[in-house]
Image (cartoon, rainbow, N blue to C red; front, side, top):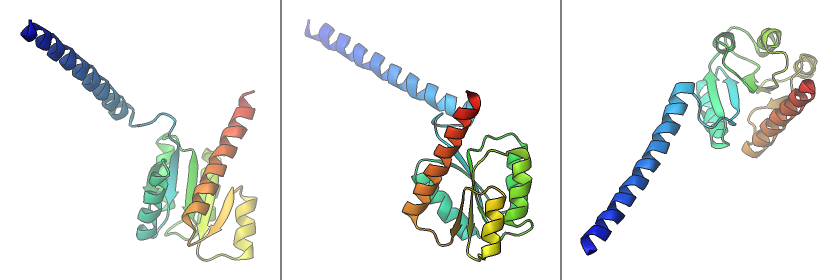
Length: 170
């Protein structure tokens, strides 16, 4: 009797493990198939010509729980948009190789007029700031930016985008 009870218990454990593994495999398959993890995870297109800063900021944004697509210049960032990849927020530098931040913003808004944009710069002037605002930038920040401040602003930009999207649907 002891052997049959332990055999039944062992079979139940194995079935439970198979169920757990099956769910894990289904989750992995779903993520690989769609290229996405958490379906509620927001995607941020991050554009900066300074590779060290780009990598650092990418790590910070991932730490906050966002999916990040890092690009070293405006042209490669625009190619992501043209591929049809969904982007919830753009964080871009002002000074980059090729197009500057304003040229990039102008081209981006032709394709994605409602996507919020945060402009970062280490070289700002009143004219740059005013031009950024006139082009629809959600926030214009000076580098270096503190992690907590960036997190708060990214969250606010995404919330404002969600709110305006909800209003446009009703």
